[in-house]
Image 1 (cartoon, rainbow, N blue to C red):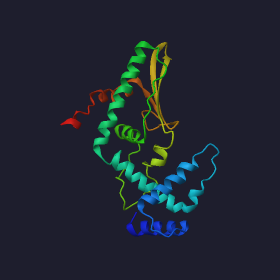
Image 2: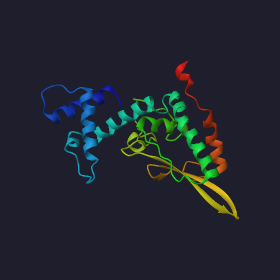
Image 3: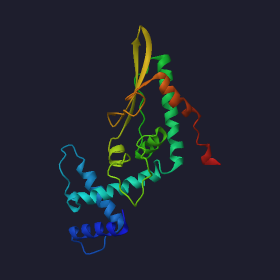
Length: 212
């Protein structure tokens, strides 16, 4: 996204508002937030705030948000992965205990988009072949904040107890926003050994580096 293209975007929105003072970058992103926040109602009716933007405008501002998420919370900064390892270690311990005790049916945690991005970084999900930059907006990029961290975004890990050849076994599947994550293990289904190999190392995660 070059500076000239961004100025053209601002100029177009400025003309559509009809107001007589110059819009700042903060004004533009605030209008974008009004568009998407007031669109997401239960009736799925369009928001009048979205009339200020063309489809290309929305695509460009989405990419601006993607860059912000990518470098502030995601793969763009290596430290984010270290923060994301902490809850993944807890997930591993939860499933180990579930195998032994077999009485807890559900464990839930509530967080926000920042931590979700860090979890994805720790898991290596939505990692593009090349880092995201302002110079090139890849329309086929994996890291897309409107898809990975939407309203009500969620990550679900399911531990399934199975009987295979009359022997108890366990399979784990992951869902991102209710969609099966097929990139995990064998088309989305992990054996216990595969899960353990990937998640047990998270037990060694630490944020001690924050205090050095």
